[in-house]
Amino acid sequence: MDATGRPAVVIDNGTGYSKIGFAGNVEPSFIIPTVVAINESCLAASSPAALSPQGKGGWLARHNAGVMADLDFFIGDEALARTHGPAYTLTYPIRHGQVDNWDAMERFWQQCIFNYLRCDPEDHYFLLTESPLTAPENREYTAEIMFETFNVSGLYIAVQAVLALAAGYTTSKCEMTGVVVDAGDGVTHVVPVAEGYVMGSSIKSIPVAGRDITSFVQQLMRERGEPVPPEDSFDVARRVKESYGYTCADIVKEFNKHDREPSKYMKQWTGTNSKTGQAYSCDIGYERFLAAESFFAPEICSSDFSTPLPEVVDKCIQSAPIDTRRALYKNIVLSGGSTLFKDFQRRLQRDIKKIVDSRTTATAAKYGGDVKPVEVNVVGHPMQRFAVWFGGSVLASASEFYTACHTKAEYEEYGPTICRTNPVFKGMF
Image (cartoon, rainbow, N blue to C red; front, side, top):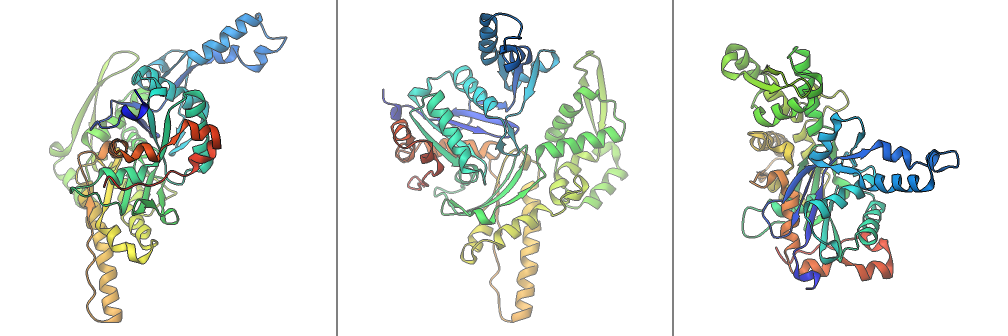
């Protein structure tokens, strides 16, 4: 069967988690941490020092060590489980949305394709995602790995924001103009998109994301003296954030509510020490609402950045061409796990609406006459957690997808530079 007759493979690599699966599915087949555990002893044995004449062992031993270094590694939850042993070291291939270690990234893709999806890459087209503002050279590196190492039939590299916009539609017609607020584990991007094209000059980035919020929750619990084992504190903070976090309407009122009735708002967390196996319990208090508040008052967790997310979204739209602004305000789409706090959508819409209304009032007072109000709409949806992957699944299910992909034959004729541009196609919408 021709590769176009089989479903495409969709891989969305994020800083914290990667979502992998086949096009046409509603949910990814696997959601795994983007981490690789590599055996240090094998790496040391196959290093240039060991390969020198002074290196210990014969050439066969060194060759076998090099082969083992290529094979003896784990990814995802299996990699995290190896951290308790002395032999393996953890490597995070993606930092702040950008690929930081290409060797580890190649190993990660290898395990994703062969161990998780269990498919032959030669028989499938691939859709990969990339962060906004990714350098074109990175697309070339990706193309080289996919076509040279895995010999894939075709490749399409999509910008995450465009896929999230495709996933966020609420009617039968998908509106490909809007602003995507993509808050993941490593970085938060505010990306304006017009007719499927990203407006690169208006993209805003915020150095507050899931991992920073988890560290903030961890710090709050540590300062309060909660009896959480140090080796488990980060994981506990992450689970507390995901299980009990919510967005408050007013931070001062929320503090007062907690102080008046602590028994009503305080929660208990029970866990087991990963080393000793002993049970422990701790209280969960202000961090329940302070986690999400990091987006609306970032100065509480970061000394380097103090602009609230609603202001960043407003600045992003105001820097876009004037004829697109009303459409952008009307379709602000949430994407990523860090936007899943309860009432996050309502709070963001309220705060942006305040900024827009005050500007409209000031304009009317300055120039007189009636000013047409601006509609502000923040869109949340059930697919918010893996919106990018779901948008990729929808996109790769379209018949036009295979004609938009770069094929192996084109790569062999023109080289990796063909993957610098990936055409936008909207026929499916």
